[in-house]
Length: 268
Ligand SMILES: NC(=O)c1ccc[n+]([C@@H]2O[C@H](COP(=O)([O-])OP(=O)(O)OC[C@H]3O[C@@H](n4cnc5c(N)ncnc54)[C@H](OP(=O)(O)O)[C@@H]3O)[C@@H](O)[C@H]2O)c1
Image 1 (cartoon, rainbow, N blue to C red):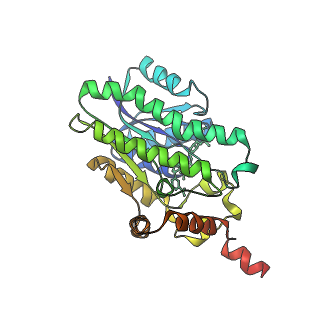
Image 2 (cartoon, helix red, strand yellow):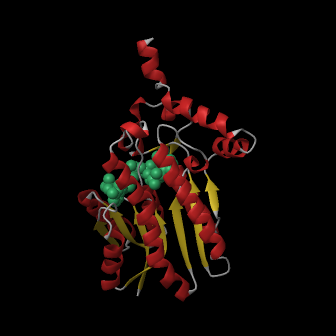
Image 3 (tube, rainbow, N blue to C red):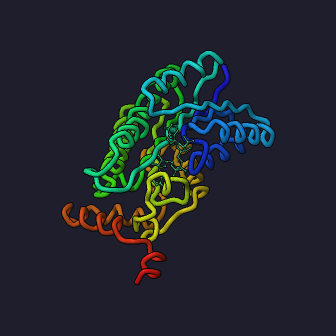
């Protein structure tokens, strides 16, 4: 059996940078996203540069049977997943009442259901082998209610809570679960979430995807349960313990609603 790192959402952003790190480590990869051409190009590039084997799997994780199809494809090729990176995910900016239900439904499917199902499918074999690692992409959003991105923040709260609980259940088993919690990061996320009219990426410090991926990789390898990226984000999450929840709701709303600085300057 070939041992492999399975990364979802590897066609761009944090997932792509994680794929590059694992490739440099000489690990074989299975990469999942919808963009078939981008995945194939990345697979060819990483195979040529690092002499590893990379399997691109063009799959829409919003489809209910997608995780099971991935597991079947890997099983047929006798590939074992030693590290699972549940990174694929997206958000949507705007009030819940006016939001497109199909997009929210797909968001819950990708961010929560596919993540839990992939974990379920690959955890059993990891436990049988007595070793394995799982990295789940949560967010600083997991610690807050998110007016104007209500479902996205709630989906990341699910990821954090699920990952923390699982990491405790698995203590001593040889399998670790890590929840990576980045703040705003420069990737395709902003456009995919229609955040151009939000202040989220202008009011807060924005990290580089390479830095977030390198931080997440180190946390995964150490088997940390929760890894919050960035000093300011850590301080913000610590500070939340002392703030009334009603105040937190209002602050998040104000941060997300305000116009980007450049635009505000032009109009004013
Ligand atoms: N960027 C941020 O500010 C930030 C902050 C905290 C947490 N995060 C989390 O980090 C993770 C990675 O996001 P990113 O920032 O790197 O954004 P990104 O650049 O938009 O990457 C998202 C990845 O997910 C894939 N994906 C989206 N929908 C999919 C679907 N239905 N089926 C399969 N793959 C799908 C995309 O590939 P295709 O489009 O090719 O399918 C892409 O590879 C997400 O879980 C996100 O919530 C991001």
